[in-house]
Image (cartoon, rainbow, N blue to C red; front, top):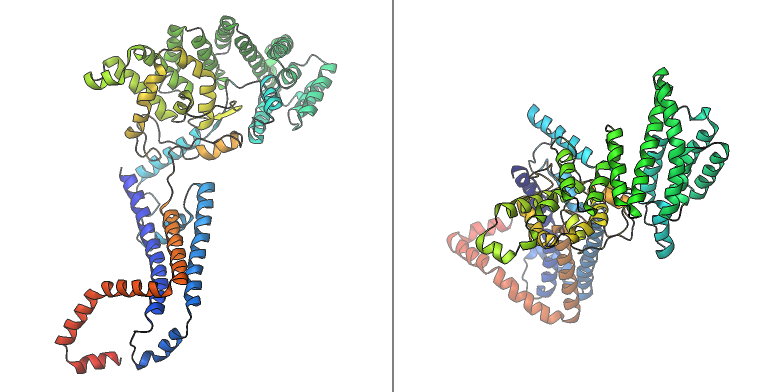
Length: 553
């Protein structure tokens, strides 16, 4: 709260300075306008004769042009402020004022005052960087059989260049090693993973297969050339046969040197990837129990390879089987405070607790008698999940349309919310009353964390980088969900009011110069009535000779 208060004071200071600057400009225009409408009755002394002569020579067109120009300038500032806010999410005037006027206003130094503060800030920064890391989507779709078919039907590209470039980097990391140049087929595939043109990659994979039974070549064809899941599964089975042979050979030689060890690590990654994709093919083709068995066997055989997050695939398949006891067992292992969280883990835990009470839950009854212990646990689980990723409920409640999930996701971001809801919406619908309970309780999370960017409740503060990263990962036709919702800055509203006021003043002065003069005289007389009263009292007290000497200074 202290940090929030300090931030609010800084914004208040900047708003104060820029508001007074704008107000003084406005008062200058207003003063010139009043001089115009009142220039006839005004009495000036001899020292101001020149100024009076100059003002009396000004025509109404000058004052109309003056107010019109001020309106135009205000409008240009308004357009620039709006563009800057839409692009960068902040006010340009506020940013400049905080950066340059803070020292003049006695702002707090950015440097920490003690070592404890420094350590806390560094820990927070490290956490923010780790939470803004982009992860590979454990449930990513097949390019040829799913993403490309979407493009053929709609004419839209579901994947961004940034997302596909990250996938190319992953493929080079998982499927290549330093000894590939010693084997012609692997050397071809090493170049194929770097190709940007899909047809060039597919042609290179066929060329590699002409030389040898290359597992990575089958992987590329299964991912990008196969137009159905059945075709992809056949190619992955061929890849499995070739990959197992390479894995057994490199396993026997892994201790003979660093090069053999790197080759064995590559062959292990290839084998795990193939088996995981085969399990996903079985899941998509309706053989869910077979897919669950394959995933369990894979996790037992390679327990240390957590980079693929196979447990999230397993959770989704178990939910399809409605094996909720097995789902709870998996959560008990992976929903640990020392392990990284995900939307799948948090929302699946919330679904299981909501399942126990959702079929009989009624908001009216709960408001009369209060929440029971089980209902309270379910609500707390939902609040925990919403705090971790606040974008998911809108997709689960179908308040926002879904698109195909990207190949990479940002945890706690909109991309992760899309990936989760795309596969898990059906599981929430299957549990009677679960979506109703979510609808009634999810917004209560935001009352617990009124300043999510500065302090969290159960998790670290919400990272500020999610919007930028999600815009890179998600296609342009999708409206990215932003949290917390950004309100219009004060300066946009103020500039809009200033522009409208000066434009109206210019129009009225041009159309009704005499009537505007009457209104201005009445306004001026009312405004300066207290001042005139004070001046009369001063003149009655001070001698006239002293007042005359003061006016001659």
